[in-house]
Image (cartoon, rainbow, N blue to C red; front, side):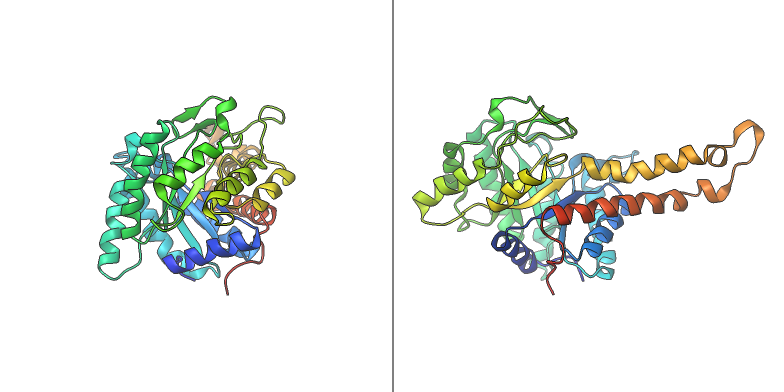
Length: 340
């Protein structure tokens, strides 16, 4: 199947919301990690979301120029070609983009998709994220209003993060403290600024103790039940049940119970990066340790070409990451839910 059209992406999100499951959103940084994500979704018979962060886009742009836009565009174009060979629908998304990178990342990508739509084509990406969590909420929402209007022109869904997620992601960091919990007042202001769909669809990354990266049990207190308070707080005033499509950030290491509670309360997308990075790298490390004398020309020897050939260990890496994506689909109840 091809990359999801705007209509298919909206249907994917609607089905997830109604069925109380969510799509893993897998960060990729290469054509190989892209294939690993696609393979994982296909093996799970789940549609999915593949995303590129600013750091990932810079890496994809090459270390000579480190151009985020060309890196993101190149991988998206590649994805539009190769995704046709996988029997699932895939949405392309750009991950965290703070204020100082909007002009060098999201705004140019929105312009590219607007040009495509004006020419009768589909947008290059299906959604973009604005991460204003480091800004005051008033400024965060003012920028979100502007970006949402531009996204609508490109038939793109906007993701917004209105309050901080702890830890560090591509240079944006927040302390782990009581500010990591979104309040009903926060989402009331969000609904006033962005509407509840009438101004354009958006995904909402609310905070319920989430932390990016790796953490040990006990270091973070997740409260996914808070999402129910946020839904009900706005429903009472708007008359619209479960008005928000929530995103679960900092999901690596979450318990099955925490994930289930989040799904019941409106999460339709859960980001996964740290765990898939490890799943990709672990088989490579294993191969290198087991074949030390073969992958290196030690003591004047010539090594073994079949062992240091990137295709050899690259296939192991792809399989390892694909397996972790498949597990994520199962954890999020997405297995077997692909659109026919």
